[in-house]
Image (cartoon, rainbow, N blue to C red; front, side, top):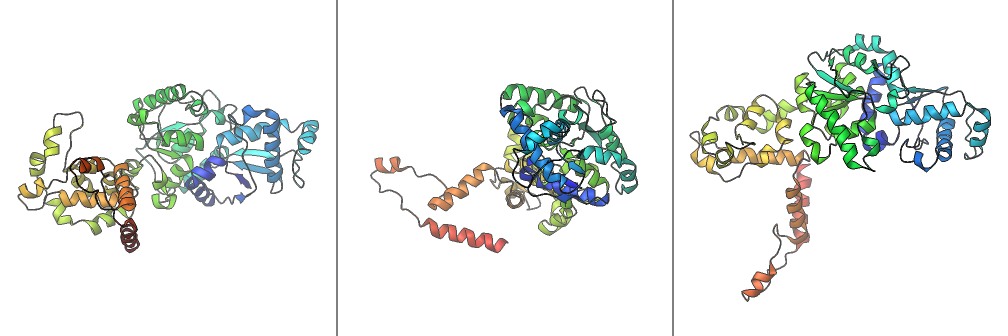
Length: 434
């Protein structure tokens, strides 16, 4: 069966193509790639350019798909909505003939193609999926988000637009619990954010608030555009951050796929807490901790750091107190990625006071420095670090020059360094690290 991935999957979330292919393979389904496919076209932005242009572009895709079979599997809600609508319109032979005259030579659509949404295909395999589950997701509370273009009209024939159940039933097949929440079938706001960000973010905020109130551990959706919306929250809504999974990722985890196999590290939203809850933490996480840290030393830390640390003392009664021992406890529990992908490791002052006052002569200065190195290796460096390194590579210095003050003192300008030498050294270090 030919598969239509769509723009968002292809260009922004290739790891969702990977998880979908992995799932289809385990279901014994081999998707046929059609590299010539173009945009569906987009149901909001390009649709406004005119239905005639949209229909012609859809006809091209349908004509290409028809060369490979009588069914087309579509993985994106918006693409499904557009291509399904075009397929229905083009069943009119007169209109189809008119659209075919607009297509390039060698591409014609003759009608009769069946458009199948991925969710519909997966729902039809629910009984099989249940038998393939190797790692039940019992205890996981899931907030499903269908997305408008999968329920208006329904992409799954058995779904009621006012109360769709297909994705809930797939979630239940994994052993997880699908939680109900007030705005479950409402839009995520993505179609309007480019025109009115306030309206779009307000819609999303209401939905996230409902999801949080329901006590969900994650959001699961079948739509890549909606996935992007939840995965890349605007700064104003970061307080509502919650892990998001594509339905194929959730099912693959239940079928025994590892986080590494699915490339969950590609998510913008951290999934570590979710993976810990279902017992699917990275298989290499504990090994990395054992390789990088001394277990005996980790267990030797006492309460002294909490009492002596300047950052801890100064923030103790604040809304965001700093606990210097929390990362140590996390590593003992095997949660390295929670630590290096969070922000707490950057709150250490690196002053060295803890080392001086530590009754065990250990302290935490080097510990935090090592965590920061691991964070940067994991591509989680703060902007300030990146800017310092960039300045060092460009000028040889890590601070901007203040020429005015030297001039007032009658001093010559600070000497210029050969930044090429500095870059070469850094490049050599990076090469050695590899």
